[in-house]
Every structure is written in C-alpha cells, then in structure tokens.
Amino acid sequence: MNALMNWMEQHLVPIANRFAQNPILKTMSEGAMSLLAVIMVGSIFSILNGIPWEPYTNFLNSTHLNEFFAFIPAITTELLGLYMAFSVGRA
Image (cartoon, rainbow, N blue to C red; front, side, top):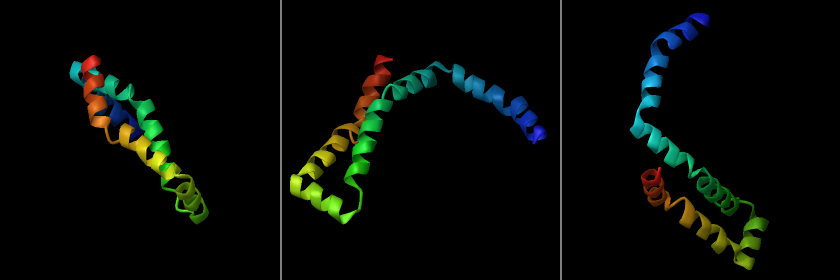
C-alpha cells in the first residue's frame, strides 16, 4: 500500500498540481462551486417529487403539490447550463 501511495505522490500529484494552477480550470471550478446551493435545492425537490409511495403520490396529486415539486427542478437543475455560463463569466 505504501508503494502505491509513493508512486502516486511521485507521478500523479505533480500532474494534479499543474491542473490546479490552470487559471481556466480554476475559474470553472469556482463558478461550479457557487452553484452548489442551486443544485442541492433542485435535487431535494426532485427526490420529493419522485418518491414512489402510493399514499404520498395521492396526497401530492390531491393538493397539487406535485406541480410545485416539478416546477422547482425545472428552474434549478434544468437551467443549470445557463446559470453555469453566468457564474463562470462572473468569476
């Protein structure tokens, strides 16, 4: 195990450091990190809308919460490319 760790430190760490120093990749990484909250909100509502338990789905349908739970991922997760273009340009 130590031999593998030593090999990785000698060969892979310098390559990873060069990638980490790249200003283009830094900017993209910072832009993506600024969108983590948007991704989390969209994911939570996607999960809430996709629970396959019949009493729960009947409740969502009767209260029309399923429309709300489908709308939130539509404006967060599905528009992520637009948000990413803005956040990378801002960073």
